[in-house]
Image (cartoon, rainbow, N blue to C red; front, side, top):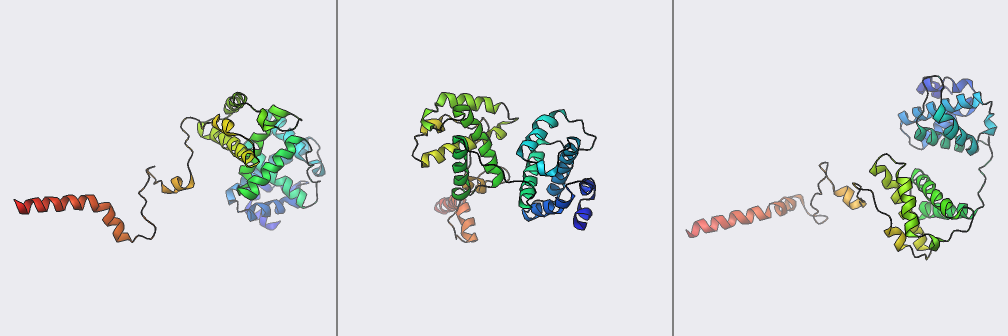
Length: 276
């Protein structure tokens, strides 16, 4: 644990004297191997300190920690948190850090594996997650974000009934989208909602469902324009697209192509001067 003491002395001082101590180094190593920046590792350790305070107050043994305990901490404790300062209270960082903490505890055999859901919605989300992971190659954080959004839609539409996409009407989808959009603080943030739902319906299209009307019912918020990777790579810092020349064109020819209209104009003026 000496490396953890040296790199993150302040945020881990309490952790190293708690029931979490045997697994703090493993948590740090897990984040480092995931190529998280050092300041992110420090932030997540601070999140773990806050969670450890809460578990101690609730007399919760480390072997009792699971998704339900994390939910209670985030949904019940955090909005009314009166823990002594300083504490990390950013819900996004806390959710991410505790997700990694559960992974580490399960890898060490401290807690049981998460139960596999058996409802039709759970099964549908597993198929969608497999598609995002193996077909689209999306990052775990993106997949988690998309799954949370799609889960809310499917639970609202089907509860514990079988998932039948043809029963979702565009108008119902628009109402769901409008309600969810109110939870976001900016149009750019709400753009992820559109991306998640469109990604899911495109997945359903590969399964043979007719979803064109549902995809058409979704639109990116005002001020958010969907870009492909080519457009993003082609933008300059000023936000203007730079001209695209054929691959392999020499630099001199680049300059000649850019100067072509100007050179033609100069030659025309010189020819006119010689004739007159």
